[in-house]
Amino acid sequence: MRGQPGRSVTGRALALLAAFTPASPALTLTELARRAGLPLPTAHRRAAELLAWGALERGDDGRYRIGLRLWEVGSLAPRGLGLREVALPVMEDLYEVTHENVQLAVRQDLEVVFVERIAGRHAVPVLTRVGGRFALHATGVGLVLLAHAPAQVQERVLAAPLRRYTDLTVTDAGRLRRCLADVRRTGYAVSDRQVTMDALSVAAPIRAPEGVVAAISLVVAHDRADPVALVPLVRAAGRVLSRALG
Amino acid sequence: MRGQPGRSVTGRALALLAAFTPASPALTLTELARRAGLPLPTAHRRAAELLAWGALERGDDGRYRIGLRLWEVGSLAPRGLGLREVALPVMEDLYEVTHENVQLAVRQDLEVVFVERIAGRHAVPVLTRVGGRFALHATGVGLVLLAHAPAQVQERVLAAPLRRYTDLTVTDAGRLRRCLADVRRTGYAVSDRQVTMDALSVAAPIRAPEGVVAAISLVVAHDRADPVALVPLVRAAGRVLSRALG
Image 1 (spheres, one colour):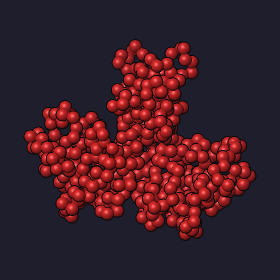
Image 2: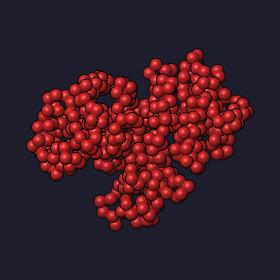
Image 3: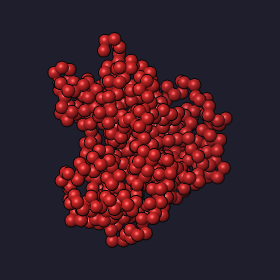
Image 4: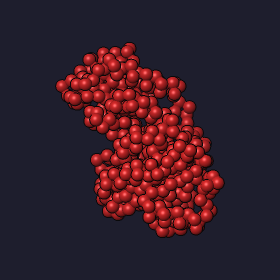
């Protein structure tokens, strides 16, 4: 252990878990070891412990995958499935009324994490997946979460280069700052073709006693969208969920 | 470490995660240490590592909770959200047609784990939650998963006492064995008031190349249920999902 300063045993086990990504959900032991930065025998020992507990599983192809038991424990995260359980009935209402994409997201550091999504099959395709991440400054939910984030989080985002997804993405720090002030004042955010040129999203905050903990949005095709009609629906959903968490 | 034979460092970190349950999603350090069977200083060190990584989070109340990052990693489990992503559109179809409870489950050892559920708000209340567990021998999805489980799994369930949830729960091993043969022969399972006296469920298998990997069901009020009408719907959903995984 002393040969690897700064990496505890727990840290090495967690590094194995962190090796899995949405693009690489199944890994050989060699890939696991390389991604976790561990010697093969160490990776093998730690992986065996994680397998025995159910945090990893091995398929017929011999590759490792995240195990159902880790998913079960993860489902106890209040900001994961806990939030989702509260929000899903309201999201279903929004879906039944609009048949558009409904999304639920929280902030983790400088990114949005999508916790739930109801995808309208005839609605505009969206880039997100449940458990996936996205930048804060472009999506509707991201703008809501950024507008209500602690000042030092906002400053870190505003100080870094703002990635341009489309010609309409706001990448100027001063303009983004004014946009966030608008979001706080009006109680909603509109991201109009700032992520893809075919989509528009309207988002509203979900408040708990400790502040804004999540955001809910509708994502619709830009060319058939009427934000004026969507705003009251999304804000009402946000208020209902805020009351449920209050 | 030698003072605690059989418990590796990784094992102790995992024991901290396993301390959280649906009934106890928030724990003090003292509770964590007691449930994990660890001395307080050890629990504190391991919890600090898990906090730093994001596997745990601490609220304003000082209590520990499962962190969003663990939920994110867990969402990569093929049998968790991966399966759910494939199944949700079909489950939404079943819901739109019936407005009843739609459930998706997998087997983990001798239990059912519910991976997804769409709850009809005007439908019969169900006992399950996403990430929750249940015995195999009573629910529709459990009967399907048990009927297609390896022989040694079936024998272990049949050899143990079968818990009686209602007067209609099948608790006789011989009768359950015949029931499982019927499920394999007909391609579906009906659990009629075997979990609660107001509900009936109809379930069908979801097959992948390696065998039956999941089950889908409708859970409806017993007194307005017509299993004959539900069976084709549920079996069709199972077949569509089997093709999607094939």
